[in-house]
Length: 117
Image 1 (spheres, helix red, strand yellow):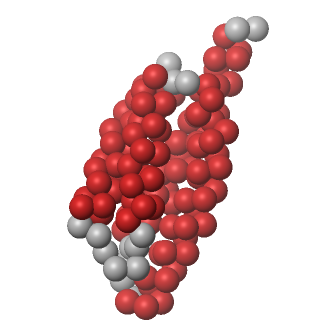
Image 2 (cartoon, one colour):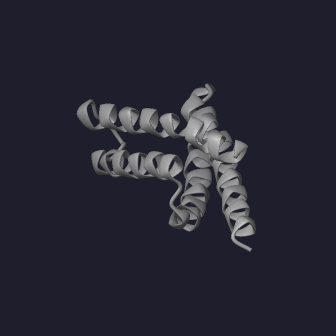
């Protein structure tokens, strides 16, 4: 039950991420493809809905997305530090949040499976 509540509490963060990507679609940044931001508007909204309504199919795609985000935001964090000597805070957020949510999803699926045995 606590895991389910934690996942629901995290859903609004993904809505906020979708809003950030909407902003980047409307106000694009050079060297950042607008189509990628548009894609992540949908991805983040699907994740938010999945965390709220707990579809079991979310675990595998979220695991793949977590890997992609670790590579993408890890590279971004390193690149921003190398070029500007500043911290890329959105990347820090993604690098911390994604694995935590993935573990919570795994715990939620295990809880549901144990309940059905």
